[in-house]
Length: 219
Image (cartoon, rainbow, N blue to C red; front, top):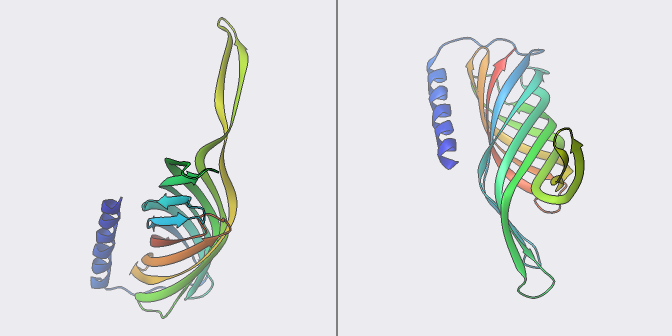
């Protein structure tokens, strides 16, 4: 995954170099909309409980997209959708000393939220700050309940089986802050590279850091 992220960074820097070499005039943005495709790279992170239980997330690359409207030349607000799958290893501690269980799985997250970016200045290359507020659905892919039953099928008769009815997970409130650099590639395209720190209402993985790269187009 780190190799994929390195390739994205190289491509990003190449686009930035080409854009800086070009000559064009910026167009007014107030009242216009844009559409962005986003990559969301999360670093590995470890959590350890007081009783010795632990949770270890691997670094991974997520994706997203969003729409936003320019309130003025510097401020735009919009809606973002994102998804992420992270591999993890967890160690659970039992009631007796030395009773531990280690297992591995994937954590799937789906996010939707409101966000705003404020860019400083009107040049092609400028810094920005951002904030977001939203909701996250997390799925640990650990079986929480199993159902079963028998059904009658014509020409076959009764067939019985079991299936996974639900998994452990939950819905969480999220919010975050970030900063980065924006480069206008053309009058109707831009590139943003930034860092975000996000918090959520979960008691287990309550925060994480994200490297975000957006490729956007003015509509």
